[in-house]
Image (cartoon, rainbow, N blue to C red; front, top):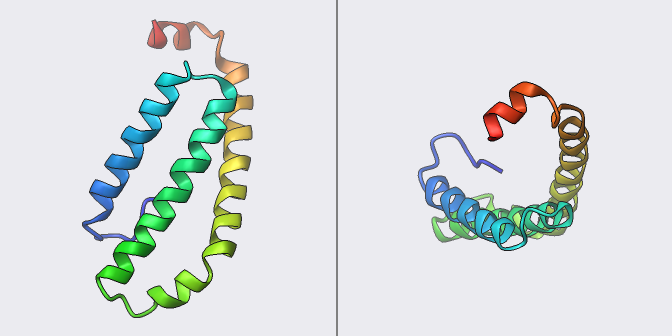
Length: 105
C-alpha cells in the first residue's frame, strides 16, 4: 500500500500508519495475533486515507475507486493475510539461526 509513484501525500500517510502499527504492536508485546490485527487495521486505514486524499485533491477516477472500496479491501486484506502467513513461516525457519540471533540481540 505504498501509493502512486511521486504522490507526495503518501509520505505522511505511510509515516502515520507505520507509527500506528508500531504503537499497536508494542502495546501487545508483538503477539502473533496482534500482527494480523495490526496489519488489517493499518491496511484498511491506509487504503481509506489514500482514497480520501485522492477525492480531496479531485483525482478524476477517485469516485470510481470509492465505489470499488469493498472489493479493494477484500483483495488487499487477502494479500496481507497470505503475506503474513508466508512471512511467519519463513521467520519460524530462520528464527534460531546464528546470524538472526546476532542481529536481534
